[in-house]
Length: 289
Image 1 (spheres, helix red, strand yellow):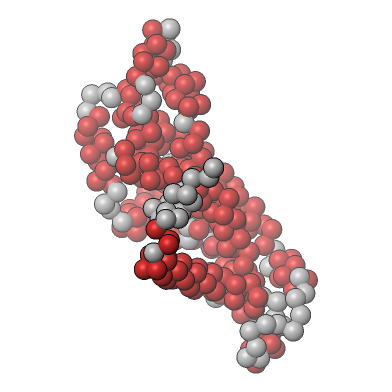
Image 2: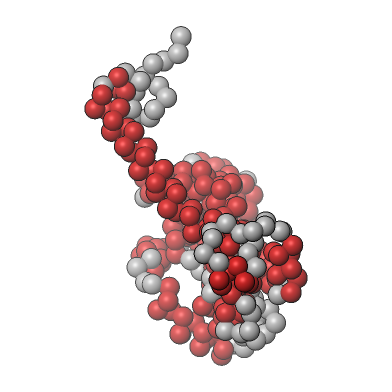
């Protein structure tokens, strides 16, 4: 026999028999539906408007275009050579994910399990780094990039993601939950700290690695300021940089609108597939911390 108290989280079936609870439930549900519609309305408008011709977009007041011809999108994709900038963004994302997992994971593991002399000071500096807005470090970061002649390269973008205080905290919090007996047993067998990290810690931390990778993908894909400063006029522009250049060039507004659709598709798809993992691990990290 089914449990009549299950199915609604904090609200039970028995509670819904009360007129007041039922009205409140319906009100909250209606508010959530309205919030959902308000949230997705701009995205839907951008996608639908991309099917319009220039004349429709400028003159017509109708929201719905006369035809949904996908060739309008494909034409914009080809004419703006968007495949090239997708490829550049892909290179930036792949390198950023690798650096985010390896470098931040190493530091998180060292602070959690190795704990060398002065680790508390390092951890305090990492926590203090969470309080510093990222934009305040752009000027000194760009000056250092210029001094070491890394302009026009993806390397600064990869390394900037590989030095992220938030990712370090996520890794450290997760590694704190790993039994110390595993590390001690590996060291008795003659493993170095790095080998323990590579052979034991990383395989057991696939869930947090996936979440950090998702965050890194979204950050690398949507970042504009640093890629613009480093990659501008280099031929390696990412989609965000190129979108800004389109706006300042001779590209029509309707083509820019379609380009925006191309830009928002990857992070939207990524979030739809992995929203559960992002929410769960972030909540667990907040509770453990």
